[in-house]
Each structure stands twice: as structure tokens, then as C-alpha cells.
Length: 293
Image (cartoon, rainbow, N blue to C red; front, side, top):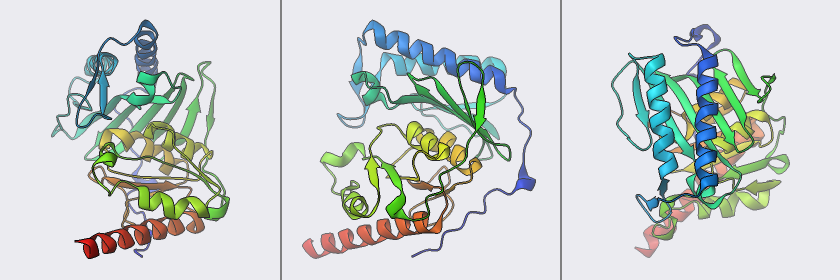
């Protein structure tokens, strides 16, 4: 098993934000209100993208437009990368946005979806927020400054990851890819290996909620493959600034170009045990597939 390390940031690498945080909080709330208003009014347009399970609604498009336009007014010289437009900028500073994370939940009226806004500097997240809806729980973090939960009243509390020291004591969360019906490499092997040896596994349906609740200590770890940068860029910083550890499936520090993620409270008995279980499950599956072939 690859050893777990994380060296992307040190306290001496703190950065002053080139934009005030309060307008970003307000923008997230405005986008949240827009999403809920459109949901309650009845979604007229729900389309599939890459697969029948990969949905986009008119609310996704409207929220991305609102966020992009407001961010452009705040920081006209920054690039913008949104899920729906999906054009990666070359700017040193750019915004990375998922206008509605958990669109299947959103379209079905389930209460777990979110809005992710991350500020990237040279491919590193320096500020991230995830607004979890419809609860309006706003989780935010700035590099070197900690992670916070900000409530609608303006009250906020600093967050810390859980203290679970073993996988047996850990409540976990995961997700499954859109291609799960047509590709056997779909997290089923990993889930089957991990589920019996932990306290429980939940399926939230939104990476924003998964990572926010790892940062808050509600979950001790989250794993998922086949994710996109806009799914997790904000949440990765939430977990790291709350004292957690985030790697890919090889045990290296997670980066924006990685597609598999393990985010945990950083305890070796949780993170390393989970990493080992994932690697063993995947190794066994690929060996079986090779023998079948």
C-alpha cells in the first residue's frame, strides 16, 4: 500500500484573499434562493447529459449564469470554470463552480444538494464554500484559516473532523458513478469490502454534503471514484482546514486532476485502513477481470 502523506500546504503558505468573503456568502445564498424558487415552481426542463443518470435542469443553467455574472462583477480579471459551461481557464486565479451539486436529489425533491464555489490560484484551492440546501448550511474555508459553518443568522462555528480512530468506529459516506449500469468498475467491489468493517455507510447523493459533513465530524471519511473538479474543489479545502486528510486512491495528496478521492479525519486507523481496503478490492477485481478475459 502506498503510504499516506499530504504536503501540498503548510501554515507558512497562507494567502490573503483577493476578494471579500461577505459578498461571496451573499452570492451563494442568492443562488440557493433561486434554485429553491425554481424547484418549488416546478422544473420544466430535465435533460440527460453523459448518461441517463447525469441530469441537468434549467435551474442548473440559471444558477451558473447568476454566479458567473456576479463573480465577474466582483473579480473581472479572474477566469471562470463552471460545470455546465465546462471550459477550463488558463488564468492564475479562477473560480470553479458547481451551480447545483446533487442534481438527481434536486430534481426529485430530496433535501440533500448544494452549491460549490471555489477560488483557485495556480490549481490550488485557496477559498471554498459549499451551501447545503434546503437547510442553508454554509460551510466555508480559507487556506490556513480553518473551516467554519455559517448559519442564516450570521452565527458561525469553527469545525473539526471526527475523533474516530478505527474504521470500526467510523461512519462513512460514498457515491457511485453515472456509468454504473454499463461499467463494472463502479464502486461495487469497494463498497462490498468496506461496508462490513465500518460502523455504517451512507449515500448522500451530493459530494458537497459528503465533504462538508466530513469536515464537521459527522462522517469520519468519504470515498468516491470518477468525480469531477467542481464536485470536490471546495470540499477538499473544507476537510483539510478542519484537520483532515485528502488523498487519491494511490495515497498521494488529492489534486484537481485526480478522479478518485478519499477524504477523512486523518487518523491512520481510518484513512490508511480505508485506503488499503479500496486498493485490495480494486486489485482483486482487476485480477478477476483479467482471468475472465
